Amino acid sequence: MQISESKRLFAHAKNFIPGGVNSPVRAFRAVGGEPIFIKRADGAFIYDEDDNAYIELINSWGPMILGHNHPMIREAVIKAMENGTSFGAPTAREVEIAELIVSMVPSVEKVRMVNSGTEATMSAIRVARGYTGRDKFIKMEGHYHGHGDSFLISAGSGAITMGHPDSPGVTVGTAKDTLLAPYNDLEAIERLVESNKGEIAALILEPVPGNMGLTLPLPGYLEGLREICTREGIVLIFDEVMTGFRLSIGGAQELFGVTPDMTTLGKIIGGGMPVGAYGGKKEIMEFVSPAGPVYQAGTLSGNPIAMAAGLTMLNYLNSHPEVYARLSGIGRSIAEGITKINHNLDLNYTINHLGSMYSLFFTNEPVTDFESAKKSDTELFGKYFQAMLKRGVYLAPSQFESLFLSTALTDDLVGKILQAHEESMKDIL
Ligand SMILES: *Cc1c(COP(=O)(O)O)cnc(C)c1O
Image (cartoon, rainbow, N blue to C red):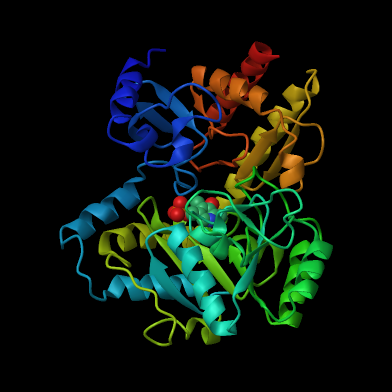
């Protein structure tokens, strides 16, 4: 496999773009080696600048649930473009997509469209603060909510009640209003609530986290959070940028039957275009400008081309619920296949799987939170990633990511993925 053109482009890119990429994880730093530059994609495959083909297990980090370059979405975009690319004024399509989202996502009674998941979570926190008149919020260790300042806080040891900035440029003043808790630990939340009585505006989490590798909520955990938030007047926010329209039509909240007060959405909602959204209870969303006092705006929000792509995607999923059973079937085949292969190997591993998401961790302990995820052998993961890539399977370039499956994966391709896995394991062990 020759990758000379990607190498040339990356070297050139570094002269003009910080680190050569427009989003850090694309640089392959966590797995060694250099990024592949993509020329085009179709169905289950992406093709690099040297025309190598790869079976895709990231799908643009989630949006391409129907596979790449789906004709239906492509045609909707081309048709919309014939009428102009942006108006900066209301359109019928925005009303249609809002009504559809409200009908699909249990917690959403009103919704505001934005341009990314980052914007959605930043705005949701602002609205929750405006609504409650409180400043602090709780976030979980290892959960990702985009790159808004107040979310870039990690869990330094002992940083239970006061966050420390994770990135230069985030002020201590900002960080001090972000309270950290470990995922899947209700007692930690009770302690935080007790020591910050009446001061917490919101609790935001990925109900099924994908950004520390796929991790599942323990039985009763989401229900417990719901109870605490209701009791304490805390706005419960599910960040479903990843899980929305993926784990079920109504996201993780529908799958687990726990309804938050607000929900943030992204990725699938744009069908591959830059779209995000936040929504929730009417009485909370009525605080958003111009209905209410909390300011939030966007020149390109509700962009007609992006809405055409998103609307086509959501309409399709809404009218084809069988997609979810099919995706789960594909996920199960891969997870069971990997388990069977690994069974015969001298290997520490854990596989977490739900629907069309899975992560293979190189640790033999159950992965239920950030601490346990961090026990993984990331060096071994890097080798695994490169071995799979060499065999034409493109995984997320980090141990701490979920993989995203699409309906474009046929049984034949699943077989090829498992064969690549078996060979890769022989290679690296
Ligand atoms: C991707 C992601 C975001 C950020 O979305 P962007 O569109 O990259 O800004 C926020 N929350 C979660 C859970 C995500 O997976």
